[in-house]
Length: 150
Image: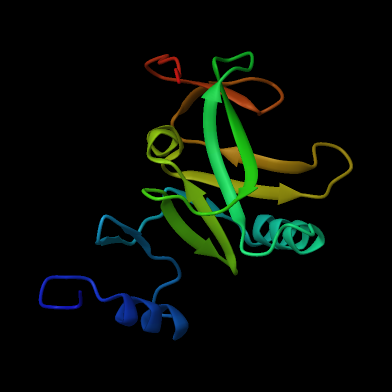
């Protein structure tokens, strides 16, 4: 690793530390500048606080996924978890985020935000893949109305 034409993990980490790149996703040995999902600073701070308060949160990050369900056909899921092989991976403000390959095709380009407002507060996912979302914001349907199975 690190030869001509191959990404260098050391170099990518070094660039990240000096602020030249903010997020690098490494999948199957290839470096990509665009993560599958992005966390806002508010979302990352809330997740970090919840992980710190969880006695079992050490070494875990946020797993974002989709599954069949909800009033629009697919629903979002978020859970604290450990990295699995073949996950898409990114870090935002010190919080690791993992997305499995199946969910990545439905979540690519999504933004996760957090608001502590009394009305309408909580985590909100803005998903460019969603053609229709339900009123609660927890489920969605794609333009091709594919149903999730599995």
